[in-house]
Length: 387
Ligand code: ARG
Image 1 (cartoon, helix red, strand yellow):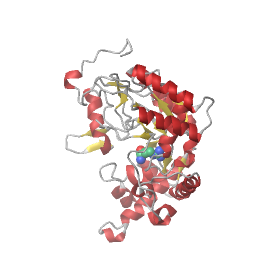
Image 2 (tube, helix red, strand yellow; image 1 turned 90 degrees about the vertical axis):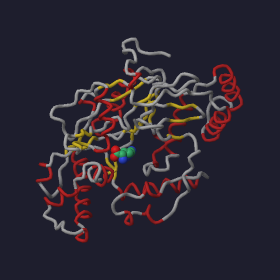
Image 3 (cartoon, helix red, strand yellow; image 1 turned 30 degrees about the vertical axis):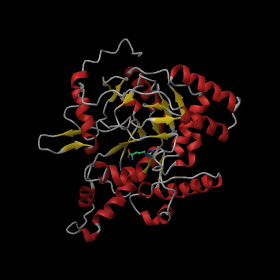
Image 4 (cartoon, protein in one colour; image 1 turned 45 degrees about the vertical axis):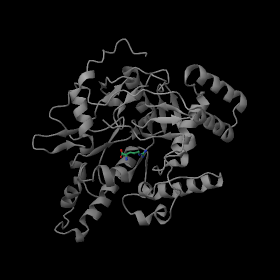
């Protein structure tokens, strides 16, 4: 297996907190054929279907796997997005940009290209949907893997009192980073960007700091309440999922980070609000002078709307791309209609598509969708573990 000579040997092996290396098997010929056929049905490649199938079969015969053309890989990644039943933002699936980094597999190389991905996708706030595809699994030779669930995540520091400072979702990955030698800021903060943790095929995770200038963040303020800025809340501009393997035509790309742009509710109604994340509604309600003595005053509901307003206002003021749940819901139904017209199923998971505030005010609430199909390919699949 190719490793970068500058990378230290996997000393952590014995006490490595993530599970044993995977041992990828031969590509399933039928899956490969199905994909190549789909590619030729939906697009008009230069070579003939028969010719390409012949090539793919002999390559699998000889090596146990095959190499996608750039067009096949781009199509595969786009269709994987189109097949993502939980994503409301699929209208633009066919414009996903692909960074072909299949030749990169050393942890240091992967980390460097993840940072480039962030710069390239962020563009000062005019965010572009982008995927970077690293080396695939090959028989007996697993590809690299990114342990973080997103390229940018805030640390969740466990404190002596049993509480968490920062994002409660990320305590485990924060522990892992520290076990691998991460020097966290002192004193630990609420919005400390975690290092990227990458292993090459074998179990040897390594940590890489992200240069601060590659992480665009938006300080949060409220359009009506000046005190809001004093809370010193912020969020990063780019959501880039990094732990979902991309599976195309029987080939698994375990490291294939992809990003879109945020929907205000993801931050304003979940990340900053969930009780096991930043749990900020009581703080907002108190500053707004609300009566929190009973749930029936609906103080949580009211505070949540103000939080979402602050998030949207701040991203707009900073010139950073952000969708809102009303617009995005309408766009999603346009997508569903287009898919139907193209004669395709459009699987969707209602509980993920409907926004976490004002569900019934959006058109996506008032209907059902094609059942998600876990076997559908190409796909981004659930991580085997999230460390
Ligand atoms: N909900 C996740 C977060 O808040 C991001 C998931 C992907 N979202 C997106 N708009 N592409 O970080």
